[in-house]
Amino acid sequence: MQTNIQANIPANIAVAAPQRVITRRAVASWVVYDLANTIFSMGVVSLFFSLWIRDAVGANHADTVYGIISAISMGIIFFLSPLLGAMTDRARRRMPFLVVSTLVCVFFTGLLARSGFYLSAFFFVVANVAYQAGLQFYDAMLPEVSTEKNRGKISGIGVGVGYLGSYIAVGFGLVYGTEDKPFLFLMIALAFLLFSIPCFLFVRERGNPDPRPINFQMVRGSTRETINTLRSSEEYPGLRRFLIGRVFYTDAINTVISIMALYTVNIAVGTGLSEQQGQAQANLILMAAVTFAVGGGFFWGWLADRRGPKRTLDLVLLMWMAIFLAAASVGLLGLPLWTLYVVAAHAGFALGGIWAADRPLMLRLTPPARIGEFYGLYGMVGRFSAITGPVIWAIVTHLAIQVFGLTPQVGQGISVLVLMTLVIISRIILRPVSDEPPVWPQAYLVTDNAHTAKDQR
Image (cartoon, rainbow, N blue to C red):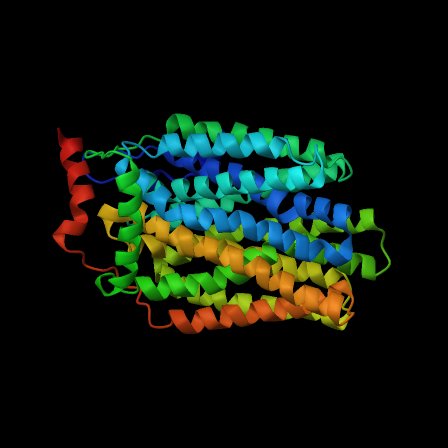
């Protein structure tokens, strides 16, 4: 897998600043990790664990229970994100943090569905916290394998190739069936570990030339820095609006990703299919989404480099508004199951655009000397939305199904409309954010200068 990806990366991607060479092997290895963690996010978060919850508690309660469990895991990582960002800014290297978080996620994923409901829910919380922490470390390493000119392209390649990991996760369900979920979780854990290894071995960090101690004073300091950063957002043009807007659109999109399988099964059962047939349809529909997500990652990454990440993000959000409206119509109007394939294909294509434009825009708004800290903020708002999104979904579906007595698919359709309003709000908030790269004061460039001096020695 790595060899094929490496061969297909254009030679002009491996371009670096003076005195620093970014090899195609390093780029390919970084990209392969995106594939690895997508195996977990698709296989566990979006597909099989929610279906395991449905098997355990029933269709009428699955949305509420899964929403609560997801919110708990994201609440934990929400409070940890600023601390983790500050730790990696002070540490000599970020890679050890990525290795440890990956191994923890792999271990607890392999234990899922092998015990009772509450213990498996606990294992999911730990695995998801470790996965989300690793994602923060991984995103902050993008500058190690890219330059300002090709960052959008490499981010897009990471997104596009990363979604190939979804083929692996969904493929496990198609090949082995969805009945033996403990075995599926074990296969996902092993695949995550296998495809992570190239990144651990071949991505070379420049290292922090000025590492600082990690202690209790750092914890207090990181909290104070986070508060000060939020308060002094006028120093960072567009940052506050971007972070607030990001809360709303990631709230909607991450939530719909995590419940897509449950929604599909309810639609399928409503058309007369059995539970197992519905789960098989969920696999196929997610496969359609993944297919278009791969192409979307490459296309939107290319567009972000040509038009700018902000303009690209604007287009993607407009597309998501239409997707949410169409998805809600399937449940509310009782449209045939095949219409979900069309919706899923468009959602997959648009999903690649979110991350291909989102990460480069965050880097554009971030002072180079404080990438780790600001990715902590970036991660924090994403985690906050991942708390509120499942809670909103759980509340709306509970009211619709349990209080008003609507069918699960109709209740979910109403919830999708609520999520669509969040995307509209985010589009309004983000409108004034500029696509022009900020001109940073010299003090904000200290990290790059220090690295350059170190590389020239």
